[in-house]
Amino acid sequence: MQMKLMTGLCAIIALAACGSPDPEAQKEKHLRAKKDAVNVEFNDAKMAEKIVGFRAAPVSTVRGAGADFSSGQRAKNVGADCKIASKGYAAEFRTPTTVNLPSFGRETPPITMTCAYNDKTFTETFKAENLSKSSRTGGAFAVGVLLCPVCGVAAGVAGSGDKLGDAYGFAELEMSLD
Image 1 (tube, rainbow, N blue to C red):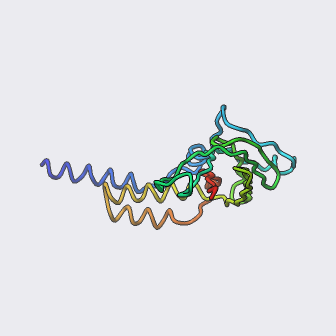
Image 2: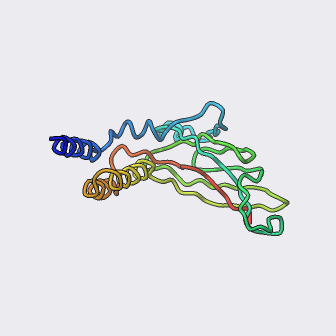
Image 3: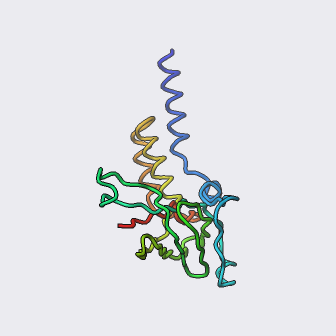
């Protein structure tokens, strides 16, 4: 009797885990601004009208194994004066910090970040990613490992593409100053 009850409970949990998340809940989860973060300044009113949300993204600059770091360890959050620029907006700040970056859905343009450190200038371009897809893929892995390998594989395959209502943006911006 207990075996049947446990089997039934496992089946219910596995089926519930295989369901797809609500797209609006995914947007809410991934597109959140922070009050104490750096805000961008818009230089194109038309772009500002197209915003679907903001994402508070950590921004850091790191140094690799060089003369200053003989142990070979990476030193996160080396302070640098930085600027980001994208189609319609820009911001200036000192790392490490958090910046409220706008999302324009699938049309979120790349960001170019330029930083000055020790009299050198470094530039890198970052492309937006599908934040909802990353979340779905991670959730499918957890289901597969913990509850139901078949459901986890099915959820992973189903969650691997872009879906209507997915949140796009930048999880973080990290630039190497090497």
